[in-house]
View 1 (cartoon, rainbow, N blue to C red):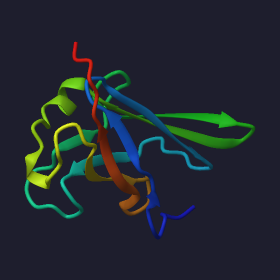
View 2 (view 1 turned 30 degrees about the vertical axis):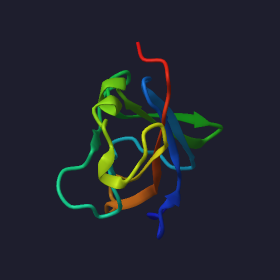
View 3 (view 1 turned 90 degrees about the vertical axis):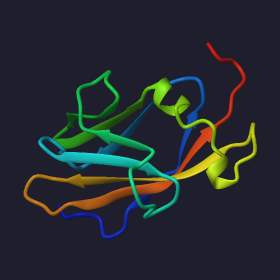
Length: 137
């Protein structure tokens, strides 16, 4: 197994006013012991602190968690990405990128993974879109 030469393009859509909870499933790769980190920024290579930074954590906590199963001898790794509702809400208002009120907010994200015995690589990258909503509880 080797690192990907180019990241897989994966556009994520987070809905405003609710937590973002999604899974990425990778067949044939055992991510046991791997280090993961993902960040959301205004645009690729935006300077300064990220808008959202996700570290590796335990399931049900904000961040990235990994589980690995065996499917007839083939490892199946599941990355769970959880972003709390309040983290997404804290991105309001969003005038810095010209987004109009009520419009989708288009940001950039990627994920770096270091598999045991391999170099760090960018495995996923794409748009991180915040979808507006009406109901606020």
